[in-house]
Length: 219
Image 1 (cartoon, rainbow, N blue to C red):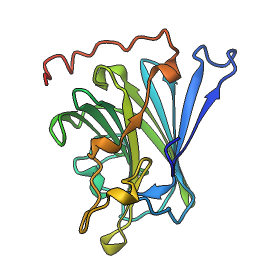
Image 2 (cartoon, one colour):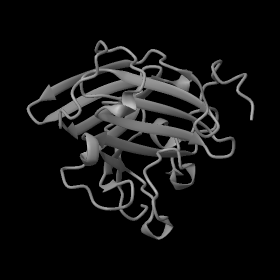
Image 3 (cartoon, rainbow, N blue to C red):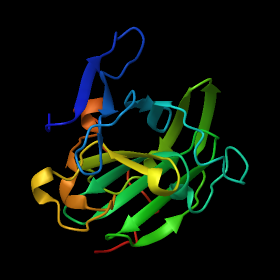
Image 4 (cartoon, rainbow, N blue to C red):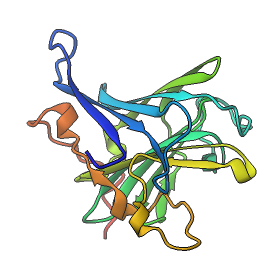
């Protein structure tokens, strides 16, 4: 594991799931490698029906308040609210998928062809949440069609708080030695993403389906 991160690969009973693996990650640091000051957000990936299942288990801060949009629908600018995000990258082409989910049920999916270059967003996502006291759980099904070809790296993030208390957390943060004076958080620093293989979840013989959404996105 990269220092400062936590991940587990768990072999599931074959009677429960015909696929061999699931992966769970805990976000234990803020973007600049300082430790978080609460129970870490956890994200679990496992096989879903026609896509990758993403499960979030996180503290509920209720800060900022809920977005004005309807639960279960895309919400532009969701990154300005309380949110958990996962990015799936082809490091050779710099094509990547960004999935953002909110405890109040809103979501935002972006397809990016190069750093910060979103060519498609606010596309549908099956996503449900439950808030219980000071924690929340969410489950999303990310269709294979959304993933760029050749995903080989990943990073995940969590954001909460308002004003000067706004907190940006990263699974794979910027190492202390790389920090520059005046630098702020930027979740699109692709050089800090770490290896991630969908075959580690789906099985070594699994082949990523072709996506019509990415066919015309040339690098």
